[in-house]
Amino acid sequence: MRKSLSRFLKTFLLIVVTSPLLTSQSVSGQGIKEGSSGWRHIRYAIFFTSYDVQHLLATPDAFKKTMEYFAPVKPSKVYIDGVRRDGSVDVPLLREISARFRAMGIDAEGGMVPTTLRGGPSVYNNQDDLDQLKRRMQGLAQVFDQIIIDDWLFTNGTDPKSVNDRGGMTWGEYRTKLLLEQSKKYIIDAAKEVNPKVQVIIKFPNWYEGFAENGYDVYNEVRQFDRMAVGIETRVPETQHQHIPIYSGYVLQKWESSVDPAKWVGSWLDNYGMPGQSNDYRAQVWQAVLARSPEIILWCAGQLWPTNPSGDVYPDFVEQLPQFDRVSGLLKGESRGVPIYLPFGSTGEYNIFGYLGMAGIPLEPVATFPKEGQNAIFCLNSMKDPELANELLGRLRDGKDIFITYRLWRKLADEGSEFRNILSLLPYSGEVTGSTFGLLQGYRETTIKADRSFTFPGVEATTWPETRDVTLSREDYDFSVLMRIPYLNGTVYVLNMPSNSYDLLELPPDVLNAIRMPFARELGVQLAGPGHVGMYLFGAKQYVLYNMSDKSADVSLKFGEALSAEGWAELVRGERVDVNVDSSLARFQDFRGPVFTNASLVLQPFEIAIVQAP
Image 1: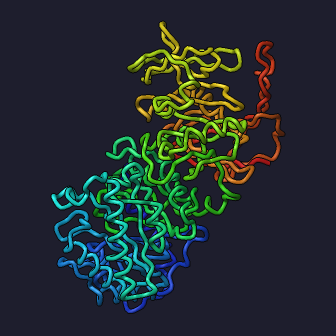
Image 2 (image 1 turned 60 degrees about the vertical axis):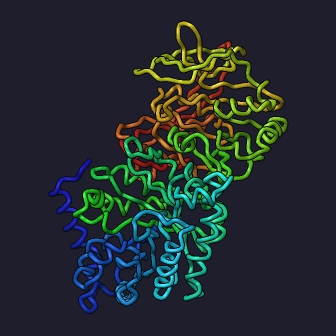
Image 3 (image 1 turned 30 degrees about the horizontal axis):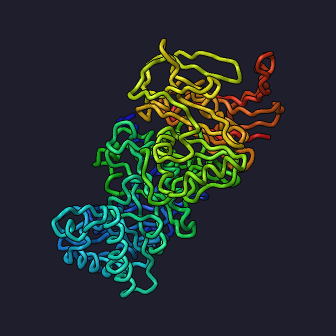
């Protein structure tokens, strides 16, 4: 919720008075020497645009006031852009400002938002644009040993020259090739001509499906640039025009950094267009914390400033800073999850990985085909791999399972692969809507009535009912939502996503529990409860649960064995974890199910918890 003015002033005064940066000795009235040593487990950096430099840093008084405001962040680094109106770099001013930061014990590095004098992104076959990029990089390289490039590096030109130069290539093919070549020559090499030791950092936007169309080749650009940063600006998923699920930020960090983990410098947050949305801004930070980002980069100083409407998220952010650092220090062990196959350069079902993650399925994105593990997820994005059908069949022959979306199965079947024989469907087309769901466990059937209707692509299966673990039930037919088909030596699970992907998160908890069930064996645990709750696994016995909604959530960690009720702990707030053994399914004569241990707790809106098993 939007903070009141009184709460903002109270928070601001508190952080100003108590900040260690402000109680240290001033140097020439320009700031504070040797400020905070930073947080114990998290590093923060702040980006200052050219506008911010002129308005927030250019004079000693403005600099002092600005750094008093940002003192609670305890930044260890700043990135500074200093372009003038004519496109040149104000080298003397940047040197002066950098000296002030370094006197405070804060690293000062360069940043560039590579827009043109016309406004908008550069056109990389326009020599004037290229010459301007070169001048700016060489100006920054005179001052800094690192320069981060904002995601306005993208290009989308459709001018006559671009259309002619594209020839028979797709826009994705043409733009990725062009950007790769020209950024090497006019950005990386240009900077190194002036400063051979300079490192140039590419910052990727959050446009998974739009990378290639806008010139981004994640794999080859990570290899070409010295370092890389990941944009995780999910903002307000339900209303912001990109509609990017919060959990996508976690996946993007894991996926992009996997090209070369040593090059990952950090993750980039953005509060643009987020007035009054402190919870959603906080959610971006949590994705960076849980992905163990090396550095959290705040874009940008001017947008977090009190006069900016979106700056009202800052007091809440400041209030949460100790919690972010504390939780970061509590995470133990390597992260783990279900592999989801996302080849580099792929597109498909829009941010499906974000929705699956927010439905409580912990994910580990991989860019090469996952041969190991009992189960793995495949979606339309996986079709970037030309050998996908044969590789999937290889998993099944090896006794492993595959979890695929209906859209992927449809594509594989239409291309004439063996997958057309896995399902037998009636030729229904169109969508179906209803509020009643059927669940099947063994031979035990139950009916769940939702409090609203859902719409799905209509899938009428002719196979035995036990292959339909979840259905949307009407008087005329049970339409498939989750199908389970034994094939070769493994099992194929086919998920029919709702027509509105967001509706996956709104499904009744029992329906979501059934969708999560195929991964219980792989993970050794299953989340039980509503959607909008992410589960992040660390090591063998640490379970992070994050409620990404404005409603409280009753959740359980379900284990397929009887465990002791002693020794469980919730580490963040020290809340009670109720542990009980459930043997109710073992009593049915027609279906003797397993015994479960449930570790349960209640998550308040946007609350995070860490359950530590004994």
